Image 1 (cartoon, rainbow, N blue to C red):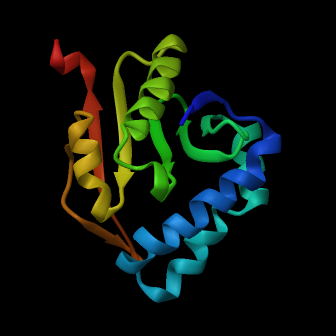
Image 2: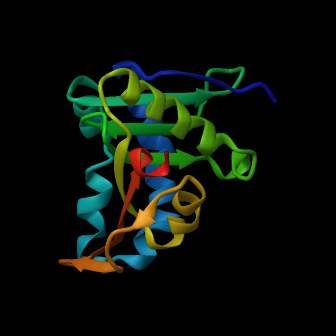
Length: 158
């Protein structure tokens, strides 16, 4: 299967939302308090994705031969990994790493000196550990939203 990674356009907002909302419901929402799940899911709506794509975020999408979005990565301010999702049928093939490398390189090309952060979903921590991120705090619960703050400092790796 041929997958291409390209810069996301505002016209991709609907497809991105349609990819990440069900994945979030499946993998992230079970770790959140039920009372705040709608807030998280609303932040991934088509309208909000359009806002991210036109603001200080950089997004790439992985598309198949039919131009269906099967993966997405978004980074805010060239330093905070905001979204990283891969369709269930494409997981385990290194696609999340490829998406991460593209947004990481774009960030470095735009002045980031090698420091990145992510608020990992509890069940995604192992992915970020493999990318070189480290916990900067334990599991935190912010008003029902549960995550793990992590950082990658490539300067320390040299």
